[in-house]
Length: 488
Ligand code: BG6
Image 1: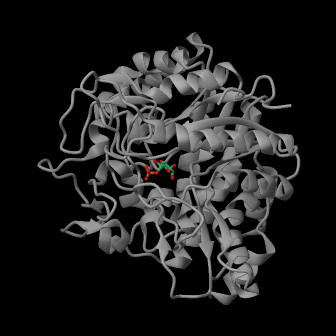
Image 2 (image 1 turned 60 degrees about the vertical axis):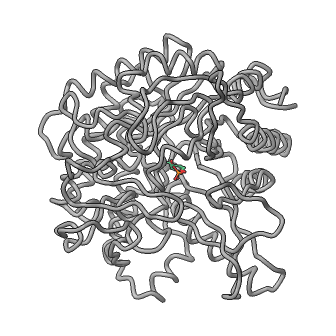
């Protein structure tokens, strides 16, 4: 059977991690523009105003803004029929609450979309991939303020109207569940644009894992984001009934570390809270029962979930479910175990798995398992993997070649696992690898953590001329796509 005809093959990027040009053509500051780089052991830091002497990786990123034609042509050379990218909210509404959209920003994405079509690629657009305008953080405390729902819907409908005849596939919020992950306020800031006023007004750099977090406010903000997402889905379908509008979940698959029933239950609960909660709201259109219990036991006042909002959630369910998949983690009630690493995920080390140089556990079988789980949970809902890949150090040889066999070794069994899942009957419609061109890491802000098939000459010390070159994996992925996933 194998991959169906018309399967979507491509790659995925986020505006803030690849475009650069952070203030060009009227763009306003957005959350990642305020963050300095870190590394695997050093968290990224934040300062409430940009420091002209510091190096901010997103400010130039890999300069996709000026290289998009060349980059999209290279993607086309690999045979892609889909390209996932985000629109930076701050290019369209620089302050998030402007009366009129910024025409230069809209025009840039017209150009990018036209370039995709020129090469036979479907654009798959994420409306918000952490790019919440900075003004929304400082003035409204992000999505904690209900007015931001309307601001987001206005931005989304502006995009829908502008590109309605050129773009079919849309995602509302990237990894909407990251708000529920990790320690401190990182997920709150990236996902919800929410930051404690004391942190916003601080006069010193704050490591992201030390940002303050208030669970009551966080759940309210997340609720507002659910409502914004549902209203966006409804508005999109009114503008073009053929739109396919999806959600996007960071799926860190969990296993119980041992057969101890306590571990099994702990893993089940962790899966519900981190992976299933947001998807359940967005696919089924209502809060799941386990969350009502969670709210009660954790003293969350849920009076903000009104009957009117419940109706909106029911009416704005998504057309397809998309997710990122990089790794799995083990859960145990035993506190005395070695922990694995991840962007914002915490879990025990799995003795059967290898890990990347950033400690992310590599688990292709977990992808098949995840696809089967999701299909069981949301029967008949089309699924798409919109991020998967290996962040690794690359070495450029003297002749300029880059032999990234480790990247191929990561991707090959993941694609094989997708094929198995399709044989199992999972309605998987597409696959976009993460960072098909090297870009800035969201978690660490590093350039050195490279995911690309295309290498970019740009480094953590700010050197490099932004030139592009093809790695070995480029030719491998091209072959995979040409054979529709048969020749791995
Ligand atoms: C996902 C995000 O969580 O993981 C991307 O949607 C991110 O923005 C990707 O880049 C990989 O994480 P990192 O930290 O290696 O960039």
